[in-house]
Length: 211
Image (cartoon, rainbow, N blue to C red):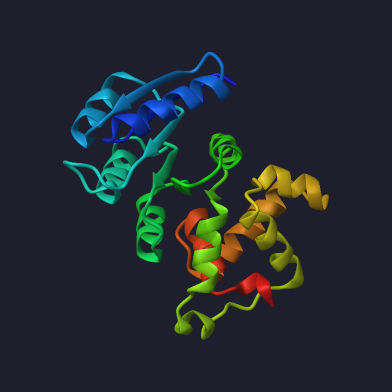
């Protein structure tokens, strides 16, 4: 799978390593590097990128703000946070800003490939370390208000958190695409989630599927 990728990372060694990694694992891909948010925004004016790998800590931009600005300019941009920050607040803010994925820089190569492939398919992705952190450090009040879901909705929610699209859910459960879409909308309403990424975050926070 050949991709157009943009790596927004101010550490040259990290950025060049990611560039080599992407070129090696996605043959034929074009992979550009930007060390600043300002330069990244300039590149976005003249290029289409399938995936944007975004570091949160940049010299001229807060990564959360940059993510939000990119999504305003390009609503369908697929952004994966790739950062050493493994704190709940950063994960939540990046997802709310429109990121489709969140990877810790300690993620192994298979996980990075999985993240890119999932996000390219329209799915969301949180690395294993992020999911563990979100689950184990869920605030106490997240246990207080859990929406009531039917057994079918719980089944679909589990598939959503696994990153399945509406079409994949429909095929797996032998239901129509419209029914899968309707269930997803109802679940998001019950969770008061603005998008799928926020729904996944709330599900993990509340340990909803652990019961």
